[in-house]
Length: 157
Image 1 (cartoon, rainbow, N blue to C red):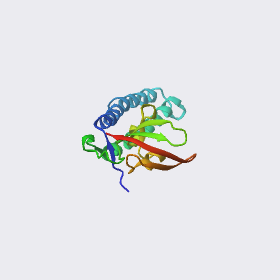
Image 2 (image 1 turned 45 degrees about the vertical axis):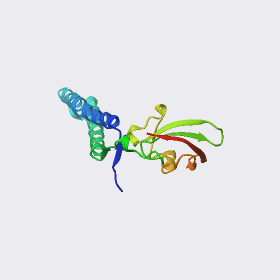
Image 3 (image 1 turned 90 degrees about the vertical axis):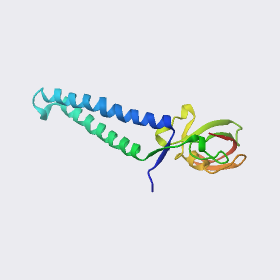
Image 4 (image 1 turned 180 degrees about the vertical axis):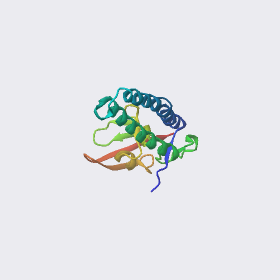
């Protein structure tokens, strides 16, 4: 299975910015914290040293994960998106058949997910369930709380 994820240019810059911040700012800060704690003496009973080493371990893990995501990231030219069906980076307007409520979402990569701003992960149950549907279709999506039915009201980029 491919780990390739598609990002908007803005999303990719944000991802790279986070990686640069961790490598250029946080890594030196944590190394400095370790050096300061080491200078305080006996390492076997030095809680500051052990906490700083634990923080370093977590930071290096996060950096490695982000490097993997960045290496598998591809920038998607949103102007080339087909708006006849729902794809990653499609903006969709949905109508919940059960209660008539309408929602606006953009399907994005996992790391760009921001539900408050209408950015829904393409790998979420609803995101996966919407892929491939066309304008006017009724999507039946299996969600954790049961089957949900949405009418596709609008698709844009």
